[in-house]
Length: 257
Image (tube, rainbow, N blue to C red; front, side, top):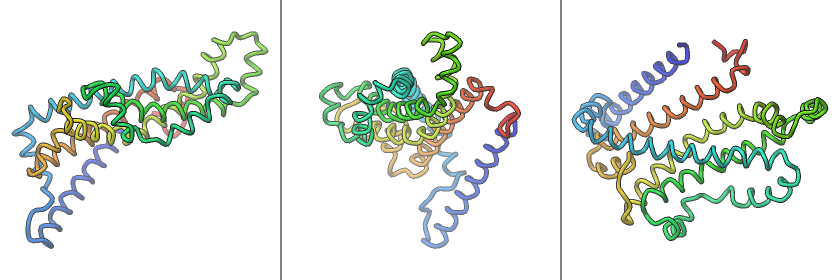
């Protein structure tokens, strides 16, 4: 409940700042440059069906990318971080490829996946994948060896070691990193929904909506608000997931109930 109130207050603060900025620009420039929240909402209501369809397409695209990045990046990162030989063999490759923005490889991705839905998911997944991979690897390497020694001395198998030590010890850090990476994922989502549409791909999603209504400021801004809400939705979902999977972390702490 407390967290919900904080989000509501933050939203009200943003609306007040938005309204203030609109009025200041109107007073100083003599014309409406930044539409007010009321004007934006009015236009959004008239195009609600189209806006909702765009939101749904973007949400599905982002969700699929997030699931794939976790399904591949989490186990791979844990293995590389925890297994010394794998770390020594693969970490140089990771650190060489990690800084490369996926959008820089769009030409090659076109050739490999075409300009359909697959390439959009690949670009977003690649950005999120490395965030999950590096976070999981770093968290696994930070596990105190005393924990590992204690579990091994009790006769635990390798599977039990991962299940009872490695995963619980690393999951909070990985999920926190994923929440922080939502902004990067939304940026990639916007890029692929605008740039890939220019070369013949399917034109769906909030990015396409914003671009299509570029010269109708209220509608374009409504699409931007949609992207913000989409990011907030996934941020909140990851936060809830972390609280559920890592309940022990919040018991009795400042973040507890």
